[in-house]
Length: 217
Image (cartoon, rainbow, N blue to C red; front, side, top):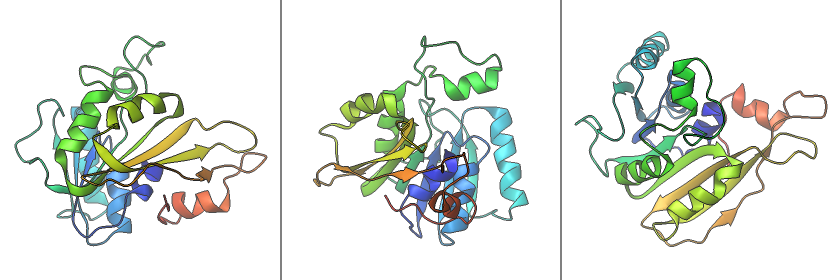
């Protein structure tokens, strides 16, 4: 999911914010695809923030990717509102109280909403992005209605991009991109089929996952 998320963000030789950066997968993928970009990752969990910083060093991206440890509800002072051309995020997929969380505390934090719910994630993304910039999320398809409701009358140019597992299976994930201070209508994209019959990745998916190509949303 982080690789597909990073591939869906428009290329810009400017500043990009990765909210909930984890070990840095999306931030690193974007920086490798867009050489002129500077990516800042914000990660709540100390262990993951340290791993992300180590991954930055191992990929020789110091100076182009920075990892900040912090909470989006109480963001570090380095994060100035409206200062990023694009914001991307892979929020926790499950609301608190729905289903059994993973037994591992770190995985539970990454997968289940805590103090910061889905609205807080979207509010923070819209706060950080510059006028005309975009906020891009990857999330569960069964929460698309909540996401669109939270974006309604606040943004424009919304694109909903389904990620189809393959065969006749319904989409389990969607990528949603919206732009601040624009008035373009919502668009439902054709999406991307991830797997062939039998389970292998499609050529289109491999171009992104293996070759680092952009995802045309």
